[in-house]
Image (tube, rainbow, N blue to C red; front, side):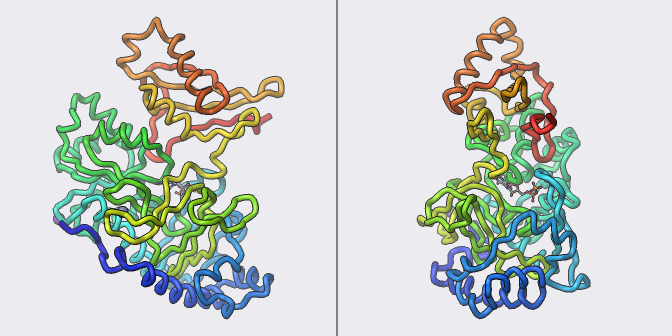
Length: 434
Ligand code: ADP
Ligand code: K
Ligand code: ZN
């Protein structure tokens, strides 16, 4: 079986990867300097010219770009080519504010789809596979990215888009899909729906799933693997750097290989901007080395994670990034304590609950209130009607142990928390309304 989509580059020696990065960076700096006046101005402010950037070690001299720069220059201010050379536009999901738009030339689409093809092959995909893409199609990058990658690998591609779960299941069964691509929250929902329809995990032909676009825990992975009877692979990316496929998991399932021939990664201290030594947890920053239309340099993702350069048994030589634990702006500060929604998910799944929950924050008499609504499963619901209060207390104390702060838990009936077909909405923060 073919293990790599582009073996020569995916398993290239480190020196070779560095050489490619340095060569591409020098070219890219000139491209940006010549074509993006906004960035040229940021460089000039620091007294930099393209001659100051000779290798990736010089990247740290360059200014950062953040989402604020993207909003300030919306829509065309960071364009690196003539609009007539662009063939596609995508937009962020707008999870954390106003949407930003990204542009692609045909070359940019090609390299993006190559990255997604690498992810599909790493998950065991070949031309024998039927790939069901149930990420949203449209402005969102998830659908098109995996769709393009699936074509490149030669898989039979089912462009389902998200939603209409009944039809998803019918096609999955009738057309014998072998690989499914969607958000992990939608995968969990599909798993739940299959069970409700009386299907066992071994009744479907799925062998693998490629899930990303939102944070998900290891516990969630096990849940999905069990309910769908598959191996679940993580995939990471963001619209600004093209879309999913910037990094992807191999069969080791221990971190995602970053496609370093296209993206140079740094980890910085989110407060000071200082580049942190390898192995530190910090904010992930990407430089796109060969994107033409939207050539972001040192883009701050706000995703917190850690890089790992130890060799991987899969033979790929590209650096691995850990599962992002969430964005720096996903972190909730509740009565002074830092809380990530992913910690709550971990506790719930460890304690045998469903991953259907919602966090509601508010303020009462100048104190934050912290409520977590947790759905019980139908089994729990019928056995345990009388024991709800005891369960709520048990969960409150498990949360207190994990978080250092105790939410008020409300167990709610099955099917009362809205399911997500795309990215899940986990937090409702009403505090800002006061
Ligand atoms: P938005 O920023 O509006 O959500 P995108 O669809 O471009 O728009 O989302 C990119 C973001 O999604 C990333 O910055 C990251 O926070 C999150 N993300 C993508 N893939 C993963 C993943 N595998 N694990 C955790 N978070 C992810
Ligand atoms: K085929
Ligand atoms: Zn690997």
